[in-house]
Length: 195
Image (cartoon, rainbow, N blue to C red; front, side, top):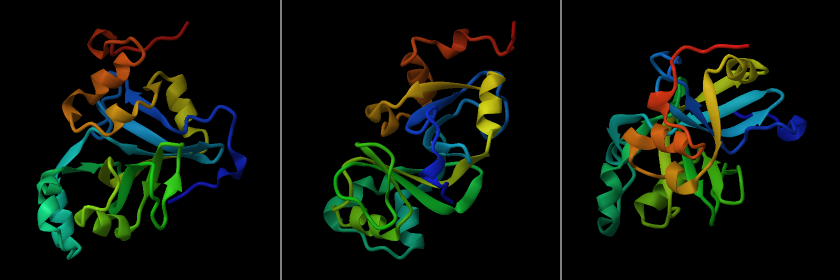
């Protein structure tokens, strides 16, 4: 799933975090942090980065019949993330700059998103990116949908911090992302209001 970048808005939230506000109690997005990797007039795409599944990288490698080099086997216990309710059977890899792989999409100078099985082979051989997250599924918004949710105080937006993006401390990502704005989520009222 991709969006045409030719109509990008000057108010694009590409390469930003979406932090769920306390009143967003939807079972999927409650307490979530989503990395927005595309946002334009046609809609938005993101990957939830703080919802680990029971599945590990070793499960993905076994499922895809990918052989792992003995010297890099320790990372196999890294969690796979629940990236969103859209295309749950499709893998998305957020990775840092350096080499890019087939189907890699450049989001910023430092961050790419990829859907290629080739990158998984390279990770298994110890030749993958230095930092990466693997997620099943993504989050998607139709044209104007995200803007509407933002106007109803469903989300906070924050600039991406690469160390937080690739952190394995999933339980504290929402608080850490809000702290980038000087906000403590536990002190935010779950009731939204407008003047």
